[in-house]
Length: 529
Image (cartoon, rainbow, N blue to C red; front, side):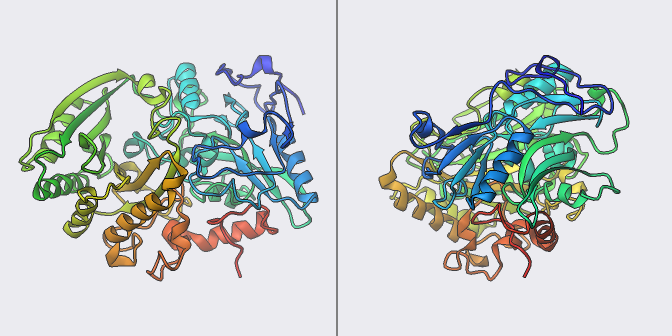
């Protein structure tokens, strides 16, 4: 197999290359690796924390890998020794999947960061350790294209893509997995041997089901993802600048901010009802309004200003300013309280998409998180709005932030079984997220987040449906509470909330590619009985 050395491929700092000639597979010669870091190594403690400081493991060692071959060797070694493996890309997993005490080998792929055009596959290759900001920068600087992923620059693609990632361009272009052409995965067979497989979306690919499982089936389920290849469905050009959506040149943002001072319950109800109604009426694919990415962000009344409604739009969309103005007017109609601030601004797209630090609450010292999530087919009912208002205005401070972000549009043009991302008729995603600094506050704050979530979904057993209003939860915001029968009294299993009718097919993929359940965690796909 021909090697293309690092001079001919991008490095982790963001170089750009066109890839090797057709039929020659790209091979990156790493600067180091593998690197094995054990508890007696001065680097060890620095390797343990991800974004959520509530969960810090103590594996026997951390193996930092920089090539697919190193991943195969590392997995073979761990399996032969009977050591449980977990994989870390960007480290943004919010549940205790990686830091579980049973995990003895932490496989760190965060230095696998290459982004380049692979002319042999006519697709953009993105290694699993690359962070979204890096991906945006390379695709934009090299070819002026992008993928509709999240504007969270420090999130790694390893989990974001596999779980069905989305972002501000998804209403215009679809979910990020709708652009997944192929995936390279290191899997373990029944005999305990690791091997790397490239699975594509081609109909005649014998591993097509493995590709399908990575279009929303979640990370850490089937093997170690080392690379993704991205290409627009149906693209026929050999020009890489025509194989993914064009990136905007600029992003227009519009924001209206309300203080809690003077905000009555009726005003709050009107504001949140208006937001939900706007999304119900303006999420049809292909419409000008679907180019807007709306959001609502609310916090406890002891925080100021407390309530924010906004949206993002490609400023190159015809009448972008008028669309934004109409959106802000519609949401504010009848609230009876003037926003403390309302404005629009335009920024160069790469600044808005990839500026460091966007997307994470708190600060480096406030990194203890709990998140719960839901899909919404319609806006909240008045009863649900009343439940949120009760918690936001209670005398006891509730750390929960409620974030609603626009969904639907082009996402909903794909059949629920065409990818593993089953929720294809929702218009919003909801996140209920708390962030704090002290371990001493864990129990209290987690309890408050659970209380709010339970009250919002009191009509459906404390979880979001699936029903007329809600459509389950998003696996990239994992919540182990959904598997706890004391917290989920709906009778709907956690895997239905995440995967709906796609779960049996995911189980079949699990049986074929991970029959020994080498890759598992609290919410992993289970082998069929």
